[in-house]
Structures are given as C-alpha cells and as structure tokens.
Length: 325
Image (cartoon, rainbow, N blue to C red; front, side, top):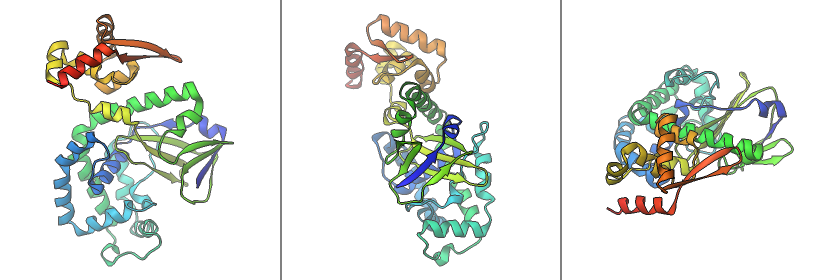
C-alpha cells in the first residue's frame, strides 16, 4: 500500500487550501469519464459534454493526451502540479507551471503514466505541455468559472466541516474519511491509497489538503519545493446540498434566502457552513435561523464546540410538499 510517514511537526503545520486548478483538473476528469457520479453532476455534464467532445474530436493530440495523462493509476506529474499553499493564487498563476513544463519532462512524465510503455507516435512531440494547458484553460473558462462562486462555497464549507472533525476527533477522524483507500494507521503512518508504492518520509515538508467538488482525487508532490498534497472529494452531503434546488413555491412562501437555508438543513450544519454554502452574510443566516427555529421548522443541537442546525419533521413535510407541487 502507499504509505506516508508523517512526523508531528509536518502534521501540525499542514493546512487546507482552495485550488482553482485542482477543481479544473477534477472537472476535466469528469468530462473525460463522461458519466455522472451523482445526480447533481448529470445536468452539468449534459450542458458541457457535447462541446468537450467536439473540441477533442477537433484536436486528436489532446484527445489522446488526456486519457494517457489521467486515465491510469498514476497521473502525469506535469499536468497535476502541487499547489504552493501560499496566498490565494489565481487559476492563471496555478496554470503557469503546467505551460512552462520542458518538453523532455512532459514526455517522461507521460511515459510513467503509461506504465513505462513508449509514447505513441502522435504524442512523441514537444508541445504536450502547451496542449494540456490550453485544454485546462478551456475547461476552466467554459465549465468551471461560470459556476466558481458556488463551487468555492462548497469547498469552503467542506474545509469548515473537516476542521470541525479535527477539533473533535483528532487527525485520525479528519483524515480517515477524506478519500477511498485513505486512513490513518497510527504510528505517524498515513495510508494514501492501496497501490504498492514505496513509503515516503514526510519530514520538514509542507502538507496540503485540497478539496474538489467532483468525486475524484489524487496525490502529488514536489520534492524540490518540499510540498505534498492530497486532493480529495468534498463530502457527498455538502456537494449534493450545494446543488440543492429551492422550489419556487417555497421561495415565495418564505423568501428565497430563508428557503435556501431550510433546504440546506436536510443534514445538520453550522452557521459557518451555511454562510459558505449560501453566500449570505453571517447576520442574515442568523436571522433566518431564528425565524426557522421560532416557527418549529428547524432545531439545533450542540456537537462538541459547534452548534448544528437541522430540519425538524415539520420542516421536512413543508419542503417535501413544495417539491411535490
């Protein structure tokens, strides 16, 4: 299995980061796969998959490059660079290292992702990094950027939930549920996947955790810069709730903003998560919650140091009735 030996200082200095490029790579994976992993993804694919397939048909090199770079058990490293973990870089800033990859390194990375097989003749060329960067830029501008505010809210809500798990259950609780095959084994050992890779010693490095809204994930590292990253899917509850639709009749009854909060309370959430998911201010969310509590549509309970809000049976009946028309 793939094991990372992580010392205490590395774990204590680790952090969660938001990466527009990682979100775009996960979107590219979903487009290449071409089938939804959950109902909320179907509408997005229906909207963007025809244009993606048309673009790939018009560019045979890119059409062959992407499944070779991302379709195996190992990604071509140049197409999935490790985030810096510093500040809030733009997509263009994160994409720059991909575009600047030397041709010989891009070819070498691609051979590794192909399992050591020689490159197909079509891919034995010097513009692989440029082709990959152009396609990532297309995916970002056409399929991710128009929806980025909502995606970012889901990502930020996931970070809030994970840090809550960390404060209540420690690193074992926070890391074991990040992605399939990953779990904390104790003894400073983190199993990152089930592949038979040599263990890596993470001492004196920066460890980053990067959530994305699509149901995929990977690990990456930059030994020169001493950075390691785990890209993982946002929890299903958050990702699905971020796509939850507010029935028009419920919006007219309660007001769109308050109705959105009630719909999101299908699973317990803190005020911080609701702020991140709705984009509303903390004061506005607090006022909506008070009205929902006073009317018996919502309840609350304490979980550790957090207060979680949830829909009552009455709230469930109201939302269900509006959805049923």
